[in-house]
Amino acid sequence: MRLARIAHPEGVAFAAIVGEADNPDGPLFAAEIAEHPFGKPEFTSRKWPLADVRLLAPILPSKIICIGKNYADHAREMGSEPPAQPVIFMKPSTAVIGPNGAIRRPVDSERVDYEGELAVVIGQPCRDVAAADADKVILGYTIANDVTARDQQKADGQWTRAKGYDTFCPLGPWIETSLDPTDLDIRTELDGEVKQDSNTAFLLHTIPELIEYVSKVMTLLPGDVILTGTPAGVGPMVAGQKVAVTVSGIGTLENTVQDRA
Image 1: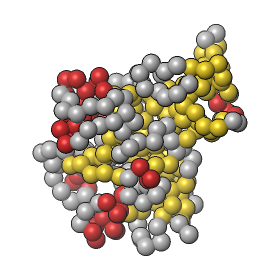
Image 2: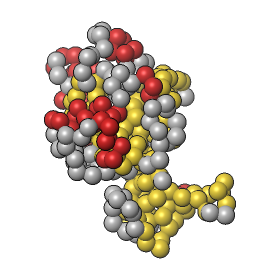
Image 3: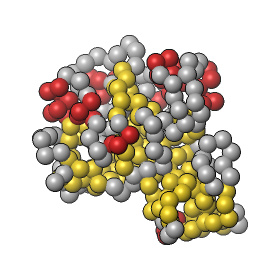
Image 4: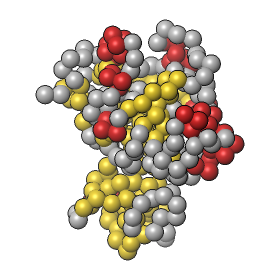
């Protein structure tokens, strides 16, 4: 199932993105979910053509946990060796934007980079989760862009400011609940030019391992998001460009780039 948050003619709601049962290759619709997407969603009778609604960030997490240097090639391009244990940091929830939203470059940064990633969405409250049980606490998977003010990251020696700006965590276009995350192509394009091209099979620390590691540190809540790391090929974006992150089995997350006033 594909779960989304939408702006429809009468407000905002969670929805499932569905096709007509008798026309699987036909147009898609957004079928409204009554309350929330956790557990077994209950549907209202309302639905709209997908073309008539606006996709929002598919979830508004209480926290965003990010994994640094989780692809060996990216760790080395950043000048370090792959870490023996996951490197975790956090983004504020206020960094989240949805598909087609504008990434706004801060005026005091000279370099803002894209980082395309697979993201995990947590489906229930949990802590101290064993890796073998990780699939029981996952709602699904979406796409993220861990936008980073690279010059500030280097200058600060820690990553909060560089990765925490408003608009620095695009998520979307939806959450895919039926997906094997172990062998997914991940590609980032900037103005149509491929910049990152890898596969989740190259993750140093697997998703079950990440959930076990993170949940030993903090309680995870429904809707929390774990960004699993970015492969090699990160680079700068400037105003007027468009960045697109594609993950096989999910879709494509597109965002424009603007300078912050």
